Length: 557
Ligand code: GLC
Image (tube, rainbow, N blue to C red; front, side, top):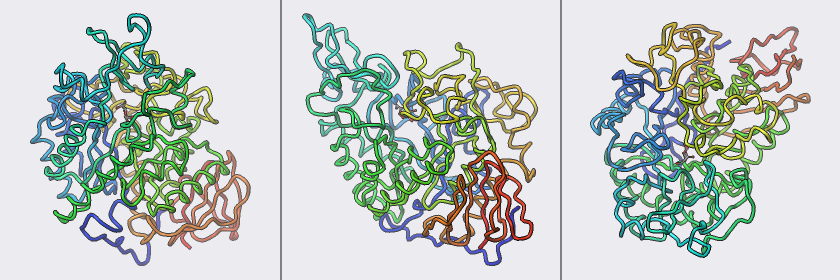
């Protein structure tokens, strides 16, 4: 379906300063979940060397940047989001030299590198928490309620299930919005600010191009830590402002970080960015995180959670674009990540829908994040035995919602999400190591096994199996990313809705018209041009285009 464009020209490059329009406004950024990407040493766990060796694959795929999930020294109570030393690489993943090599190799390939920073909490093994004096000042300790302090200080629940407080041997309690091994930092303490700015400078000095800010909506808690008054709080994350999330006070932190990033970028002739993982109840509240003096990007989880219905998709797209435009920021689209059910499964177990959703996403103005394996059309693994699961939410009795918010609630989920069922919304099923080649596990993931078992039927989904097969999902991603690069203005240019039949979305972008048929059957319409790329075979007869059910087509206009 791909056609040669008559006048391919590269997208304009932004100036190399920290200000103004920049590379990130329309970048496609690939999330490497390091533990599951590629294993170089045979311990069954992906590592930095493995990731470095596979960078040419990402270059060839056509992405602009790579986001690496935490590889820092950590007891791994939450897949490395429990950091014990922010300046050290965990031996599981390699060494600081390996990180340095990876960043250099990426830059040689003209790929930028974003790393995670985890500021809401540390590991309980962090030296600050281990020190009885320091911990008092730098974390959130409170006396308990009840006659002898035997009750938690308030009714807050951990995102992973159970109370958000754990009692110490001394009798007081500390707050952990996630696992007990992840105590929340006290951001009222200026030393915490100073330390995180120093950590950012450390990684910037090593060459990283930005930070994905974990739980960017979480650092500031409402004064007095008030009760919420009802249970099932995990279901409310992202649906309303809770006293522990999306408090206005977090924005002062993001402003300070933007000053740091811009100052560093200006001084070094680079554009370094921050992307917020923020769960906000509305597009407007999310846009606050990307005001001109705050972070550069914020994941659009409302798009991720939208059901596969044309009206719902259109309204979430409109709301997102309007909100980000009001602050002059691009929208940052995402369909899958390491916290949610993979979108092939989430959208009703339909690879056709997943492919269409991806083409839709890549035709929208702004930046997009891809999660490793989605380019292979990987489904969620829904039959992992309990004994191999590692998601802390599973062990804490959290139900359908992981760290990710309401979208993974299988009970209230829109059409298609409930079909994800098997793994109850826990997060191991989207973290199964990638299949690269071969007919049997570990499918070239590494010389050993894989830390989570891979399905026996993934032989046809490997990178090797899909490469060169024009009908494969991998080649669809390659073609889409190639076109996206070669159509000037597609990333950050204007978008206009076009008339379309019920159940179909149509909009124009510079150089193309995109149609999305969300219905389960063919729809005919006057062919708007010549098909450039389609998620399913589209036909044009006598000037009538037939859009297959659950498909997306880019038309040259
Ligand atoms: C974010 C991460 C998630 C982690 C949580 C706690 O939501 O994406 O994986 O469990 O933060 O750090």
